[in-house]
Image 1 (tube, rainbow, N blue to C red):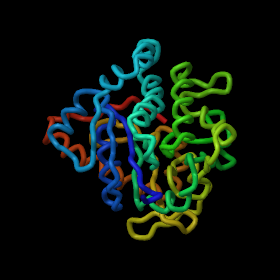
Image 2: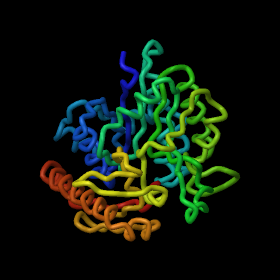
Image 3: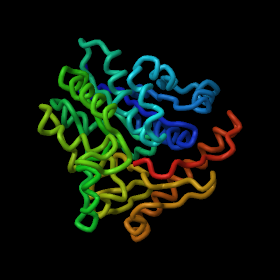
Image 4: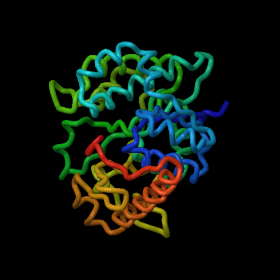
Length: 305
């Protein structure tokens, strides 16, 4: 069995459908044919995938998850929609991990829907084949060090081995998020994200992907030397693996705006060009969705991560 064998999971509602579609398409574009599991958070997402079945994509309706995990359903009315969505990361991971035979040992990887791949992540998994958990530090440059209160690591990319250590981590993560997962900093916690700070001390085989250009965004682009060669972004001379388009808010299907640390993006023409190309991808996905389910336009929850 290959040490890089993996399955991805993500979740989104119709407001993030275009981003989720772009993310999955980008994986396929870089040659990654790994299974992708999508938890559909509303009927529009279910309807889209019924109309456009995708190769190696499995769709699970949210109601199935809520029926399987009664503790999740109990807290639904006690949290805002964004906080409920934050809580889902750990619950879905635990739900999927429980469905995997203990005799299997591969990677279960979470991806935020607004990730976008520009090269294969194979090398990350090959280089860390003996790891149990992979997480990505924020790597804040000095001018953004105040953001550390939101966590040392970003939730946008997490990989767990489906071994006993990975399972224990996921189970603990679920319990903590069900107990407290709110969109505020409080008592050393923030949403589902700051819990990751303790993982390197609490679990064996946790690898912090400090140098891998994956889960890069406005919060750490200032830590890299950036160059563009054709359509490929290079960070410190290495091909970008995946960019996290956090903080990009939809006005309508044609217009978008940046909401966080805009100078980190707009002051770097090569990075701004990359955003323009990503928005072009979202517009293409809008055309596909419109043709299949009469999608009017994407509205936004605002900041997710």
